[in-house]
Length: 255
Image 1 (cartoon, rainbow, N blue to C red):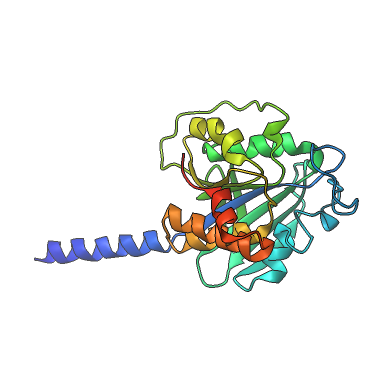
Image 2: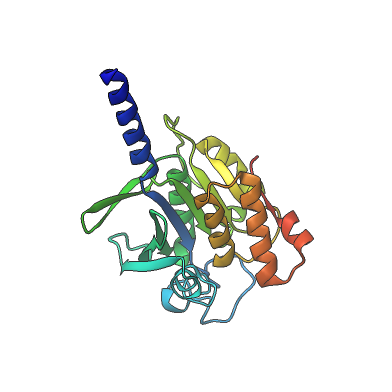
């Protein structure tokens, strides 16, 4: 009898431990860059890929850093710094207010969009582990993150990447790709990375942070892929006023 009680105790303790584990999200942001990316030009200040402080995809109203810092109450900015990698202009770390979840976002110099894309794909394949120390905690990102996201211009329209994919020995990484026609251009790579596409796109789109936030909300609430897809569409329609049918046609999940 004692052995059964002990087994149940340790089983429940193990379940509690697993449920209490941090959920870590790594977002790769290729800064908008009029000069170095094949995009429709935006105002000069927003399209300077070497200035994170004014960039469309970082510090503008719906840029990743500004939106998660100032437009939502769900996330708190806990750290900002410049990593040793000179291609990354700024790195920010957020902590979720009510869940054991952390979000690391990297702002890549727009001229290095290829590096940003390659690093995202490697991480999607479980490569390039990254450990961030926060007080007494060690947080796992890069290839050890639980969810990997890319936001920015779809550079695969213009260049080939050099990524050596490896067999994975753990659960497939969940990925989100907010870029124009991302399913069409990223599918071969995501299949090779053996990752799970939660949300990607079928047409032109504005890769702004409200869509990312909505998808993350669903993922953190353990929603199904289809529910996460719908949440992304609803958010995009809310901000873009594009019609919910159009938004639903824009986002898709899975292969």
